[in-house]
Image (tube, helix red, strand yellow):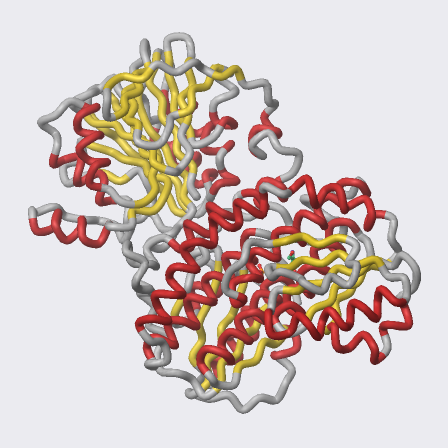
Length: 602
Ligand code: AGP
């Protein structure tokens, strides 16, 4: 997820572009750049690192001009460096493009354009757009944008300047957010409201499939049928609210973003006819043993992946806390593979464990949400999650996209080792494709979960139980509740209850039960009967028809589907439950006490 801005008006472009990029930095911040029309020529500055680096260079350059575009990057293709920073310029430096999204057919387009003599400078998917625009320099800006976007497959918000339209900024949108800000004698573009509200509160949403031509005096929006008239919105938010999309916390924003985060992580990894997985991951030969090392929520995602690896690959697999892994006397070697799972890619426990494994000769693979992070750089192979920046300390969209990326990794091993028939591959592709839409259906039931939160918010202890993969998901549920509501919670294997913890169950004690693994549901229901017999209160989350509901106090029903993918859906009510309990307990949900987003100490 990146941030893009554009300006055309009577004022200088650079001050608006920089201020806007700073307000969009929460969308991505590993490199940044601006391109400005100065006397009919395009000038640009691009830097790796945060926007402050760009500001420093610009302070020395004194770029002037009244038309320009800017970009702050969250790398998806290509390392975070100056060469890959946006805006991208074409072969002759007379067109500049800033892009937010993923161009899925970038490889084919790049080959076609290179064959036509275009010279690429970056490793990014985005650069194909600027070279395509050069192909349509004979058309006016609107027609050129429409011709270019007709060639693109994937998601994009584009901001464009070109010397042949020295007073205009062009734009286009498909799936990635894009807004127009209407000013007095100036008009602006941005990915999100925070970049606009210092200049204007009159905002127009650009819809999918539309292109835009802005001048200082007018904003024109076009779809395939012609010009579109759209009433501006009057934005009432203050700046801080705007960065959260008007929501009270980043956490609820990120919980609700998960369908899009799943789609972004899946982009390009399924064939269009859903018959095949296009994994572009070469994990190498099947290892003697597959290790997953991680911390916290990433460890819980690893627990899910471990069972999947055992089931699909029929090899030994283990998920170990990175802080424990490091102090075990393990004889790892070249036949072992260690997968380091980390949202930030900087967690020192996980990074150290990965380095240790590498030093022992094991193959190391990273699954990270931050390209350019230490783990993604030091791993031999990085399988990115494309959840976009996760700001809330409590992880939500990183967890579900980690499960998705790890599923792709396991399936890549299965496909490469002949353990996946064509029919099985097609079945997986269809189920994966349907996942984001099912997540949307679950999130539509948010109020049902809010109603249950009050039941938990006064409890002393909350227990989470499940068997197999459900136990792994229960671990994530208890962590979410603990870390944002400060309520004590613990997860246990449902079969373990009778071996001790049942002593703590008495009238009214709340138990959250996961029931998504069809072959284990009956056993877990028996355990729940033991809880009910002692007066416990049971909140069940299931993706199956519970014929024998054991008078469960509340049942949250998930969309049916493949049990192996149920953790992605079951995580959503668990995240929302924790969020609404924390809301009732009035804790600092985005920044819980004592915690940090990335733990770079041991
Ligand atoms: C998740 O809600 C927590 N904030 C924490 O457990 C986190 O998952 C853990 O610190 C690992 O972080 P990483 O994924 O960035 O490595």
